[in-house]
Length: 287
Image (cartoon, rainbow, N blue to C red):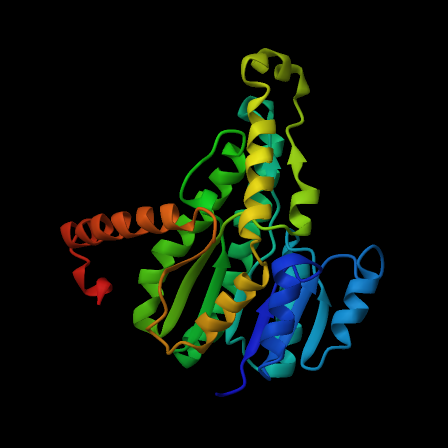
């Protein structure tokens, strides 16, 4: 297996932290991004930087210049980027009406615009050598929009839309685009969930006020029964890297709780999607 240059975002915790360790253990050169490496994430950055094959970069993914500087740093040292793992993201929870336009803009900047910044900057180097892999970490809510997660789900729908269309565009150029759809996992992301800014509307939803609590209880029960392991998502990234070019699936579901439901939806849509491409004269992109 040849050594690859791998850029992974959101590595200060959760899936990103585990993925950085797992990929570096294979001997690949990992560039791990996180914010505030000299402040709140200083300890995480120091610990990760001490791991063999990992270089930590301080990057604000919503800042165009910060992202470009990171790409320039990697290219200056490695000459290319072989694998991009867009793992960083954030979540919002609450009744949809409580989210302001600014809330929605922020959600899309983090979960859609930021991954696109990196994809657009990495693609020229991948095209140049007719080889590359982009892995975008989405969610089961990238297939279904759940109550109280509408804004978050909408952003993941956006990421999946970018990924799906791009998958078929660049595959003939030797580049694979793959989506990972994790289910619910006990990671630090759950502790950083944002809520809608317009709290004035919440009282108007008293009729369903107990539903979020029921959702939380059901999730906690799943965690207790199934015991989902976040390492499974890191392993899914490793598996995609190891698969041959052109043989990587568009979507990989990683969800021991409700994953079969998401997988069934993916398979049904895939059949109909092929019909759409056929209808619009793009059959050759399916091969």
